[in-house]
Figure 1 (cartoon, one colour):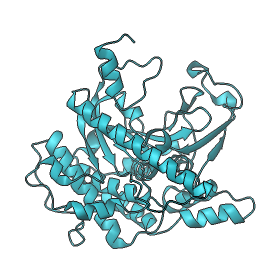
Figure 2 (cartoon, rainbow, N blue to C red; figure 1 turned 45 degrees about the vertical axis):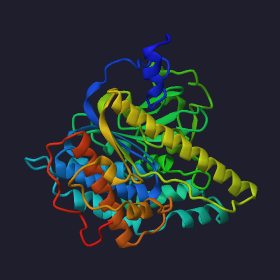
Figure 3 (cartoon, one colour; figure 1 turned 135 degrees about the vertical axis):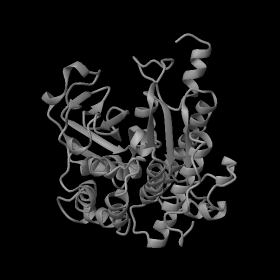
Length: 391
């Protein structure tokens, strides 16, 4: 691309443009929702945001939901129950709580990571990723497949993102296809939803990689990339989608003009005495690198809004709600929401009060972001979903 304004526009945007993309092309009308990673913490924070979007009547208007990691748990469950949602004349689904919130909260009341890791280490023929997938299957998704998600005429397109360790790019799971641009696409995949979410949320090094056994003949030759060859077409080795894009931006940002970004990702704690053994030291360094990448993407998202490249809004679990300068925002003191933001990035049981506070905070942060930057005509909500718990 020639030097000048085009380069500046491309460089400020928070996604990687590849050959064939057109960074200057006008995005399509429509609203997309991006849900970050962050374990149970992010999952519940996003559930609160989904509750508020539903209450606002905006959830029904979303045309794309792009998710990674912990966000993919909530997104996949929303996709699975979408066709059962009963929207009223105000586009509010009265049964969202029963179909989405209750089962997700039941999952958040169980620890699945530690037990799965131990089984993967000590029991022959068991792998940690397979055990995580089994836990998702039992708790949320049953034997549902990607084909149980809504079609583009029935609701949003749900895109669950993982990272292809072999090709270094995003591997996407959706109803119409799965694959990446270097290997190509498999049309109408019948992969289990639990497997897709397991791949998307396979936090390294303990919960990944997830290995998919593929049939090379199933790849669409019309989507052939530079790596549509063996062994890439017979085996896909996948890890957490957040390794490539922890905000789940790419598949939404390149297509739509209005982008809503919910960020439940964490930040590494200070460590006065960092561990020195090679495994824990490497993990610490990788966490610091991830922190910097997420921070950069966040700054680029906000800069892109300010430059008019996209409409929409960002809300983060570490945001001070006062930054929205909304006179009637829900009461969320920053010192208390930071405590919630520091909930460990785990798939570990959270007590009822902590669950409710995370949901309340996601609800309030989404409310402030939307009413400030997207729909200033909307009224303040009557209160938190769980008023007794607050934040």
